[in-house]
Length: 605
Image 1 (tube, one colour):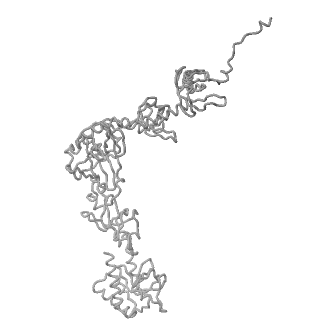
Image 2: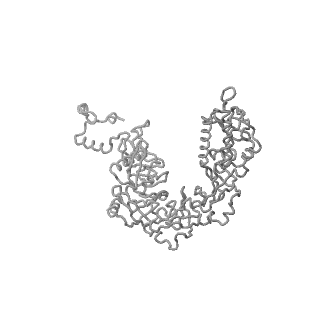
């Protein structure tokens, strides 16, 4: 090829222009403005940790590609769009910018976190602005329901579902319900909502209207919303009233559920209304006439009635003849026995029994009843005088102890008194408790019977012969016996003689031969100074006694015979004579004797 063909002619290059101008300086002001506007519309400033809107530009089986106006597109897992089954290219969604550029230079986005942040913002906004939210009930839980609001699970307490108690939460699962946010706890990610608050606002006007028109005696229709042991609460259409258990029925009931049920509709009457506390007292039984007003005229004093025991107290039991008509059976009218017992020993609640009307006051609506009147009074039995004739023996139960004796129940309603002096021939019993206890069985003998006054005198020692008839010969005046000092008082000492007999001795008569005074527990020889059979008293002395003469057989016989007015001074003279020879101080012994006899008489009385 020729050299002319290889040579090409190039245009002239303006080196001055290239040297004076830099890169990008060839744009006019209009071109620059147009390019900056185009750049701002295609790339927007993006901050990390914030929620932005993006446009779906691509969808695969595993990922969704989003354009958020950044220098690069972001990729989000397809699993985060499961709640949007109709997602397509061009849809706008919110995402959370986790990182503008990771190690691979990729923009990291999250729709799940964007949903959470947005939901909490919406919840806070709803709470601040008191906005009603449409929630979806997902499931029930302990004490309430779990609802979905803005993708966040919130708790709807059972008490906040409705103004009336809800007993079955399952009927709300899967349904939609309007709620309001009442509490937010960010620390525990806890939200509490209420549906009741919406209903209360709707009922406020209705409640105020009811309260304004409320008056005593007004009959209203209501629904039982709650039941307690003391009554039921009734919804009167936005305002609640209490129907006390005593105002449900004229008869006695143990629990309101005996006659009423939850959600039951019924008519009630307004008994009282407190405007300040807005408390309404309701009545149901007042809509019916009182049962006493329709009590049969055949029921009079002495009539026999039948009913059910509705209450048992310490003092008696209440018999319900018909609902609202009750009579009191006092414990004293349950048995002819004079010893009051627990009414539960005779009857229990719900027992069906018969009784006799004792008193009846229709105006005061009071009635007293008795059940012992259904049987014959044991004191009026024709066989009483033969059965409890004087001298007959019986066994009974000790029911009561007193200072002067004890009462024995021989049969139901028949009691007798055993005086303390009729318990033992030999022992000196100060109180019956020293001899017997309550509920012990004791055998007795009838001493006296007064059927008209319902009195029966009994004795226990009379079961045996009087040993003092024999003791009279053993402990004759002047006889000496080995005795033990049991106790010492200020003036007298108590001695235990043979056969378990007790005797007494003056303190100064305890002087021994050596001049000392005998003490309790010592056994010494004692001489009988006096033997008082009727008073069951033996007076002794340890000091030496020198009888003037040994008693003859005639004198002993005279001593055993009943003492008359003429013989007694002679016996006293003998005692005094012996006392003269022994003590030389008749006045002191005589005073002691009189004092002792007087105290014995008082004790016996």
